[in-house]
Length: 474
Image (cartoon, rainbow, N blue to C red; front, side, top):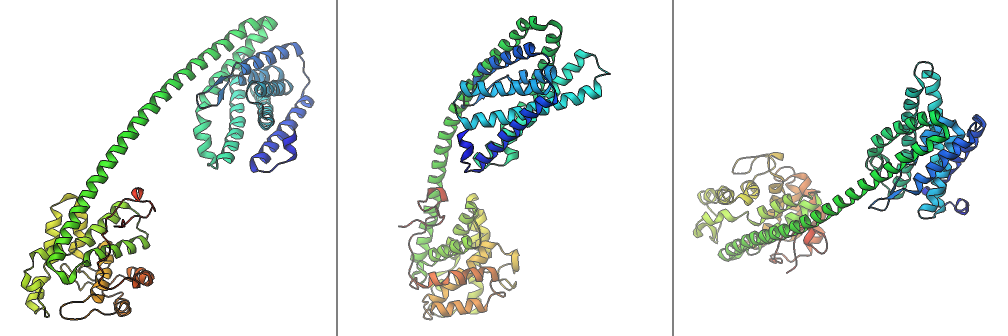
């Protein structure tokens, strides 16, 4: 075959190996045992060829045939030379019945003749072990069933292997999904092959009339099965299409609702910024930076990212409960005023916890002034007791606060802010978060201190053109 002269892929080499193995098995079979009943073998060959010619095309483009019954029957009746002859004829008829591809002919000839040879060796073993204990008719049924299962094993492994090589899918999954379901089919029809062998031994050439009927009935039953399967598949495809449309509609509604929630949050943050002009844009910038760090730390879950975003954006919502005289005081706060100011995380938590979709973010709001060493407030949490979103936020909040102007001081440089955050790693801040912050600092350094950043509308990954979750340009 010409293609054997130009083997380029692993599939080509596997086909060549199968063809070589089948050719060896075909040759050896005629040395093991001579053909003792050429007329009977010719009848089985014709029936097997007819069965293969009547193979049924499946809805997904494959084919199903019961011609292996002829191979199993020949293994019982005629031994190795008869079985490999039937297998070779089946491969040749399949070549003319379907697409005439030499690669497929070589592959089918190889694995089918090899399987036939293995089946006859199994039959010979059964005859040697059980031949003197079982009646001939019972022995033939056992031999037919085992021969058919041997065909299933060898053919199944070969077909699953070539599919696996072609699709790059694992062999185990390929065998399970494409071959495994045929096991009972081969087992039952193997018993049919044994029964036909018994009939052939009893009636000889006259058995042809009896043997044609099962072939026709098998073909009819397979055709009916395939037709019903095709109808069921079409119904499932229609149902799947309807479910997909419903999913798209629900997803769109969910996204619209999420956007509405986000818009509400941003409106509230804007209201807070209007109240305190000195921190204008602070919440948006911090939320921006918190998402950057979260992604660098390997957080990919959309809901977790959204929770971090909401917590960072709404971290100061509790300042609604802080009087203007304290919040907007141009001088440093007294200890008593600081004590009042420290209530805002708990106030913010109580506000957000009343809204179900904001409860996860409320935990970040409550913990956003906790410290890694346990000296923060309001609960004195330490280390990983602090929610990861709050640990991320603490670094971002401190950075933005240091570089921004306040009524009582000028903002410091980004480099000074970086130095302070590095100094406090392991005491005030989570060291891992500080490492991520340091890695992102060169990019953040380009941002103008105090610039209120563009609106930060969190979008799920599937809705973004660039595929990166986070913000959409205004």
